[in-house]
Image 1 (cartoon, one colour):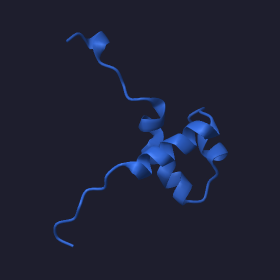
Image 2 (cartoon, one colour):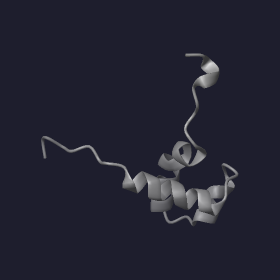
Image 3 (cartoon, helix red, strand yellow):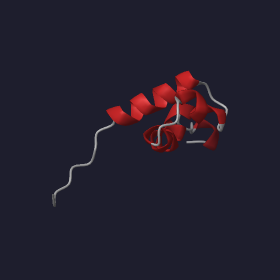
Image 4 (cartoon, helix red, strand yellow):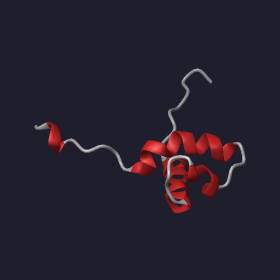
Length: 61
């Protein structure tokens, strides 16, 4: 496999962890999107994608 064949994840997946934190702090999607220079729709997609990911189960809880 060549390096050129390896694709990076889409922008919404790369920014999802930061977007979630800022969203939990009460910032709007528009405000969150200003820093990385993406639209509020991309931020909404990132948050939705992150929340739909399976959460690891805690075996010790």
